[in-house]
Image (tube, rainbow, N blue to C red; front, side):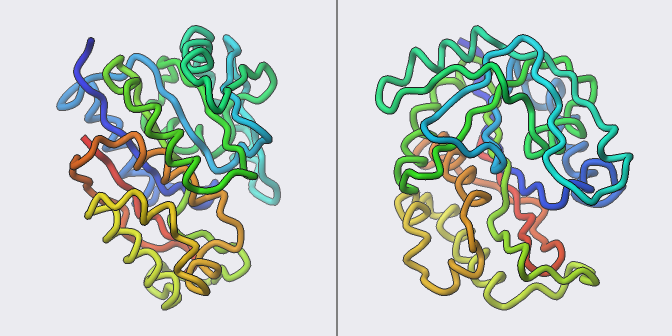
Length: 263
Protein backbone atom coordinates (compact mmCIF):
# COMPACT_ATOMS: atom_id res chain seq x y z
CA UNK A 1 0.00 0.00 0.00
CA UNK A 2 1.31 3.43 -0.99
CA UNK A 3 -0.06 6.95 -0.77
CA UNK A 4 -3.04 7.24 -3.11
CA UNK A 5 -2.18 8.68 -6.50
CA UNK A 6 -4.35 11.36 -8.11
CA UNK A 7 -6.31 10.86 -11.30
CA UNK A 8 -5.80 13.17 -14.26
CA UNK A 9 -7.87 14.10 -17.28
CA UNK A 10 -5.76 16.14 -19.69
CA UNK A 11 -7.15 18.02 -22.66
CA UNK A 12 -4.37 17.39 -25.15
CA UNK A 13 -5.57 19.37 -28.19
CA UNK A 14 -3.21 19.84 -31.12
CA UNK A 15 -0.15 17.56 -31.27
CA UNK A 16 1.92 20.74 -31.59
CA UNK A 17 1.26 21.41 -27.90
CA UNK A 18 3.91 18.77 -27.22
CA UNK A 19 6.68 21.00 -28.55
CA UNK A 20 5.37 24.58 -28.61
CA UNK A 21 6.12 26.88 -25.70
CA UNK A 22 2.53 27.69 -24.80
CA UNK A 23 0.42 27.83 -21.66
CA UNK A 24 -0.83 24.27 -22.07
CA UNK A 25 2.59 22.68 -22.29
CA UNK A 26 3.85 24.83 -19.43
CA UNK A 27 0.96 23.67 -17.26
CA UNK A 28 1.86 20.02 -17.95
CA UNK A 29 5.47 20.76 -17.05
CA UNK A 30 4.41 22.45 -13.81
CA UNK A 31 2.10 19.57 -12.92
CA UNK A 32 4.83 17.03 -13.56
CA UNK A 33 7.19 18.98 -11.28
CA UNK A 34 4.76 18.51 -8.38
CA UNK A 35 5.38 14.77 -8.39
CA UNK A 36 8.25 13.90 -6.11
CA UNK A 37 7.73 17.20 -4.27
CA UNK A 38 4.19 17.92 -3.07
CA UNK A 39 2.83 14.71 -4.59
CA UNK A 40 4.23 11.17 -4.45
CA UNK A 41 6.09 10.00 -7.53
CA UNK A 42 4.13 7.40 -9.48
CA UNK A 43 5.70 3.99 -9.86
CA UNK A 44 3.78 3.36 -13.10
CA UNK A 45 1.42 5.24 -15.40
CA UNK A 46 -1.75 3.96 -17.05
CA UNK A 47 -2.93 6.16 -19.91
CA UNK A 48 -6.28 6.01 -21.68
CA UNK A 49 -5.92 7.95 -24.93
CA UNK A 50 -8.56 9.07 -27.41
CA UNK A 51 -6.36 7.66 -30.15
CA UNK A 52 -6.49 3.93 -29.43
CA UNK A 53 -9.91 2.60 -30.41
CA UNK A 54 -10.40 -1.15 -30.67
CA UNK A 55 -12.92 -3.96 -30.70
CA UNK A 56 -12.80 -5.25 -27.17
CA UNK A 57 -10.42 -3.80 -24.61
CA UNK A 58 -6.65 -4.21 -24.74
CA UNK A 59 -3.67 -3.13 -22.67
CA UNK A 60 -0.12 -2.73 -23.96
CA UNK A 61 2.13 -5.48 -22.63
CA UNK A 62 5.51 -4.93 -24.28
CA UNK A 63 8.76 -4.10 -22.49
CA UNK A 64 9.61 -1.19 -24.79
CA UNK A 65 6.53 0.53 -26.30
CA UNK A 66 7.25 2.39 -29.52
CA UNK A 67 6.48 6.09 -29.97
CA UNK A 68 3.60 6.33 -32.46
CA UNK A 69 3.28 9.40 -34.67
CA UNK A 70 -0.39 8.99 -35.54
CA UNK A 71 -0.95 12.29 -37.38
CA UNK A 72 -0.02 14.02 -40.61
CA UNK A 73 0.73 17.45 -42.00
CA UNK A 74 2.87 18.68 -39.11
CA UNK A 75 6.50 19.87 -39.03
CA UNK A 76 9.30 17.32 -39.03
CA UNK A 77 10.23 18.42 -35.50
CA UNK A 78 7.03 16.78 -34.25
CA UNK A 79 7.75 13.52 -36.07
CA UNK A 80 11.24 13.55 -34.56
CA UNK A 81 9.82 13.34 -31.04
CA UNK A 82 10.46 10.12 -29.15
CA UNK A 83 9.29 9.04 -25.71
CA UNK A 84 11.28 5.92 -24.79
CA UNK A 85 9.51 5.14 -21.52
CA UNK A 86 9.61 1.46 -20.57
CA UNK A 87 6.46 -0.61 -20.55
CA UNK A 88 5.18 -2.71 -17.68
CA UNK A 89 4.23 -6.24 -18.76
CA UNK A 90 3.57 -7.08 -15.10
CA UNK A 91 0.99 -4.29 -14.69
CA UNK A 92 -0.56 -5.14 -18.05
CA UNK A 93 -1.03 -8.75 -17.02
CA UNK A 94 -2.40 -7.73 -13.63
CA UNK A 95 -5.04 -5.55 -15.31
CA UNK A 96 -5.89 -8.32 -17.75
CA UNK A 97 -6.26 -10.78 -14.87
CA UNK A 98 -8.38 -8.32 -12.88
CA UNK A 99 -10.99 -7.79 -15.57
CA UNK A 100 -13.24 -10.78 -16.04
CA UNK A 101 -16.18 -8.94 -17.58
CA UNK A 102 -15.46 -7.42 -19.97
CA UNK A 103 -12.16 -9.22 -20.65
CA UNK A 104 -9.04 -7.17 -21.35
CA UNK A 105 -6.44 -8.68 -23.66
CA UNK A 106 -2.70 -8.02 -23.64
CA UNK A 107 -1.45 -6.33 -26.82
CA UNK A 108 2.12 -6.53 -28.19
CA UNK A 109 1.78 -4.20 -31.21
CA UNK A 110 0.50 -0.74 -30.27
CA UNK A 111 2.83 1.43 -28.16
CA UNK A 112 2.37 5.04 -27.04
CA UNK A 113 0.28 7.22 -29.36
CA UNK A 114 0.40 11.00 -29.34
CA UNK A 115 -2.54 11.23 -26.93
CA UNK A 116 -0.20 9.66 -24.40
CA UNK A 117 3.32 10.88 -25.14
CA UNK A 118 2.37 14.46 -26.09
CA UNK A 119 1.29 15.11 -22.48
CA UNK A 120 3.57 12.69 -20.64
CA UNK A 121 6.78 13.95 -22.20
CA UNK A 122 6.34 17.51 -20.85
CA UNK A 123 5.29 16.09 -17.47
CA UNK A 124 7.98 13.43 -17.08
CA UNK A 125 10.67 14.29 -19.65
CA UNK A 126 13.22 11.73 -18.46
CA UNK A 127 10.85 8.92 -19.56
CA UNK A 128 11.88 6.75 -16.61
CA UNK A 129 8.41 5.81 -15.33
CA UNK A 130 6.88 2.71 -16.97
CA UNK A 131 3.83 3.54 -19.10
CA UNK A 132 1.08 1.32 -20.45
CA UNK A 133 -2.02 2.20 -22.44
CA UNK A 134 -5.54 0.86 -22.16
CA UNK A 135 -7.57 0.90 -25.38
CA UNK A 136 -11.26 1.78 -25.65
CA UNK A 137 -13.90 -0.37 -27.33
CA UNK A 138 -15.63 2.31 -29.40
CA UNK A 139 -18.58 0.01 -30.12
CA UNK A 140 -19.68 -0.01 -26.47
CA UNK A 141 -21.98 2.52 -24.77
CA UNK A 142 -20.62 5.33 -22.63
CA UNK A 143 -21.81 3.76 -19.38
CA UNK A 144 -19.52 0.77 -19.95
CA UNK A 145 -16.50 3.05 -20.34
CA UNK A 146 -17.38 4.73 -17.05
CA UNK A 147 -17.67 1.31 -15.40
CA UNK A 148 -14.23 0.37 -16.74
CA UNK A 149 -12.81 3.45 -15.07
CA UNK A 150 -14.45 2.51 -11.79
CA UNK A 151 -12.73 -0.88 -11.92
CA UNK A 152 -9.37 0.91 -12.16
CA UNK A 153 -9.77 2.75 -8.84
CA UNK A 154 -7.74 0.26 -6.80
CA UNK A 155 -4.63 0.90 -8.92
CA UNK A 156 -4.36 4.36 -7.37
CA UNK A 157 -3.39 2.77 -4.05
CA UNK A 158 -0.61 0.81 -5.75
CA UNK A 159 1.39 3.75 -7.07
CA UNK A 160 -0.29 3.91 -10.48
CA UNK A 161 -1.07 7.32 -11.97
CA UNK A 162 -4.18 7.10 -14.15
CA UNK A 163 -4.25 9.62 -17.01
CA UNK A 164 -7.18 10.12 -19.38
CA UNK A 165 -6.15 12.09 -22.46
CA UNK A 166 -8.78 13.58 -24.77
CA UNK A 167 -10.86 16.77 -24.94
CA UNK A 168 -14.20 17.74 -23.40
CA UNK A 169 -15.07 19.48 -26.68
CA UNK A 170 -13.46 18.22 -29.88
CA UNK A 171 -14.84 19.17 -33.30
CA UNK A 172 -12.11 19.31 -35.94
CA UNK A 173 -14.66 20.09 -38.65
CA UNK A 174 -15.35 23.46 -37.04
CA UNK A 175 -11.85 24.63 -36.12
CA UNK A 176 -10.99 28.30 -36.57
CA UNK A 177 -7.42 28.23 -37.82
CA UNK A 178 -6.94 31.94 -37.04
CA UNK A 179 -8.41 31.64 -33.53
CA UNK A 180 -6.57 33.27 -30.64
CA UNK A 181 -8.35 31.10 -28.08
CA UNK A 182 -11.01 33.52 -26.85
CA UNK A 183 -13.58 33.06 -29.60
CA UNK A 184 -15.02 29.62 -28.95
CA UNK A 185 -18.41 28.74 -30.38
CA UNK A 186 -21.44 29.20 -28.12
CA UNK A 187 -22.27 25.48 -28.35
CA UNK A 188 -18.70 24.60 -27.38
CA UNK A 189 -18.83 26.84 -24.32
CA UNK A 190 -22.24 25.47 -23.33
CA UNK A 191 -21.17 21.83 -23.52
CA UNK A 192 -17.88 22.49 -21.72
CA UNK A 193 -19.61 24.33 -18.87
CA UNK A 194 -22.37 21.74 -18.48
CA UNK A 195 -19.81 18.94 -18.25
CA UNK A 196 -17.76 20.98 -15.76
CA UNK A 197 -20.82 21.34 -13.53
CA UNK A 198 -21.45 17.60 -13.65
CA UNK A 199 -17.83 16.94 -12.73
CA UNK A 200 -18.04 19.33 -9.78
CA UNK A 201 -21.26 17.67 -8.64
CA UNK A 202 -19.76 14.18 -8.95
CA UNK A 203 -22.58 13.26 -11.34
CA UNK A 204 -20.90 10.31 -13.00
CA UNK A 205 -24.13 8.92 -14.42
CA UNK A 206 -24.88 12.27 -16.01
CA UNK A 207 -21.45 12.32 -17.65
CA UNK A 208 -22.26 8.98 -19.30
CA UNK A 209 -25.57 10.39 -20.60
CA UNK A 210 -23.89 13.26 -22.44
CA UNK A 211 -25.66 12.40 -25.69
CA UNK A 212 -28.95 13.43 -24.08
CA UNK A 213 -27.77 17.02 -24.58
CA UNK A 214 -28.82 16.55 -28.19
CA UNK A 215 -27.51 18.95 -30.81
CA UNK A 216 -25.05 20.59 -28.41
CA UNK A 217 -23.43 17.21 -27.76
CA UNK A 218 -23.40 16.35 -31.47
CA UNK A 219 -21.63 19.62 -32.27
CA UNK A 220 -19.18 19.17 -29.41
CA UNK A 221 -18.40 15.60 -30.53
CA UNK A 222 -19.24 14.59 -34.11
CA UNK A 223 -17.36 11.48 -32.98
CA UNK A 224 -16.97 10.99 -29.24
CA UNK A 225 -13.56 9.29 -29.09
CA UNK A 226 -12.06 12.34 -27.36
CA UNK A 227 -14.81 12.43 -24.73
CA UNK A 228 -14.53 8.81 -23.59
CA UNK A 229 -11.18 9.17 -21.73
CA UNK A 230 -12.94 11.61 -19.40
CA UNK A 231 -15.28 8.81 -18.33
CA UNK A 232 -12.35 6.58 -17.35
CA UNK A 233 -10.79 9.35 -15.28
CA UNK A 234 -14.08 10.30 -13.63
CA UNK A 235 -14.79 6.63 -13.00
CA UNK A 236 -11.45 6.17 -11.27
CA UNK A 237 -12.23 9.07 -8.91
CA UNK A 238 -13.64 8.14 -5.52
CA UNK A 239 -17.22 9.09 -4.62
CA UNK A 240 -17.24 12.61 -3.24
CA UNK A 241 -13.62 13.27 -4.23
CA UNK A 242 -13.32 16.95 -5.21
CA UNK A 243 -12.13 17.91 -8.65
CA UNK A 244 -9.91 20.84 -9.61
CA UNK A 245 -9.74 22.33 -13.11
CA UNK A 246 -6.89 23.90 -15.05
CA UNK A 247 -6.31 24.92 -18.69
CA UNK A 248 -9.90 26.18 -18.79
CA UNK A 249 -9.46 27.58 -22.30
CA UNK A 250 -10.27 26.71 -25.90
CA UNK A 251 -7.96 26.00 -28.78
CA UNK A 252 -8.95 26.81 -32.37
CA UNK A 253 -12.48 27.72 -31.29
CA UNK A 254 -13.81 24.16 -31.09
CA UNK A 255 -11.40 22.27 -28.82
CA UNK A 256 -11.79 22.55 -25.05
CA UNK A 257 -8.50 22.24 -23.23
CA UNK A 258 -10.19 22.01 -19.83
CA UNK A 259 -8.28 19.54 -17.69
CA UNK A 260 -9.09 18.02 -14.33
CA UNK A 261 -7.36 16.45 -11.37
CA UNK A 262 -8.85 14.41 -8.54
CA UNK A 263 -6.84 13.83 -5.39
